[in-house]
View: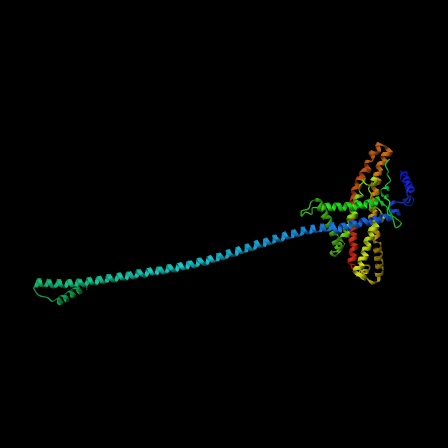
Length: 189
Length: 258
């Protein structure tokens, strides 16, 4: 087990005498390749740094930012749409309430107008009817008076004719009238 | 007999020799896994974000979740003005996370056919911790000037113990890169050693006792299985801990008065 690395080291020393790893030294503490390791570490670390800094990290950054912007935009659009919908809903509610109150007013107005018209027409009809009634009553009274007057005339003429026929006495119309009136009074009494 | 040396996994091998400024800067298996970490991260994230869909698929979701995870971590510990450090913290987190996860392969179709955990080498974690520490100092002084020193003078402390508190604060600030780096290094190192030790027991039992040994080997195998699950947790957790400590330290650079 110990022979293998030993002979290898010896062979190595023979191959490259000045650069051979120091014998028996723990490899991580062997200073033979310190300069080489620092040199190549610097080269590859700088290459990696430049590649990441210039190309890879900006790419990841813009990708993440694009996604974040896109999500923010979409959320904004959604919020705007929601606000619009709410505004539309409010406007609808408002116009509905307005229409309802307007309908109330119209109904009340219509009712009032109708009531007034009905009252007016009723009054007109009543007035017309009462006028007709009065006219009819007046006509009846007139006819009655006329009839009474005619009854007196007939009675007077009849009385005069009866007296002439019975007694042969020519009675003046005036006397006959007096008599009739007296009789009518007595009858009425 | 298979090699049961639990330390072998940490060995660094030259793949392509390279020398500059008198230093050995060879491309090693460690460099290979650093390269792989960077490549895997870039390829996976590029594939995940290729569609950039409004409704993400699974891989895009994962990429976005990691992004949000690190961003939230930074925002909650250091505030919104700390987001200028987001690429830095994200790079640290994902680099350590992917490196730790790549280190979890027991075998790997790479050099030496074995995986290599770059964060199990102290020099790497020290480098990352020092990077954070120096960033805090440089940015803290650049942004706050002398007010940055308020970091060492907590408000509401009675005058007679203030020198002592300042001393402690300075010590704790200086020891930050040490604890920051050793925590990650030691966790990765210890976990991987433990895994290989228990896995090695199976091989040793089989080699020493034959079929009966392999039968007894069920016990260390179960242990290895459990430890592997635990190591996946540790691999993620240490990347997270390193990143969140970075956030807390950066918060000091931004708001030294607190």
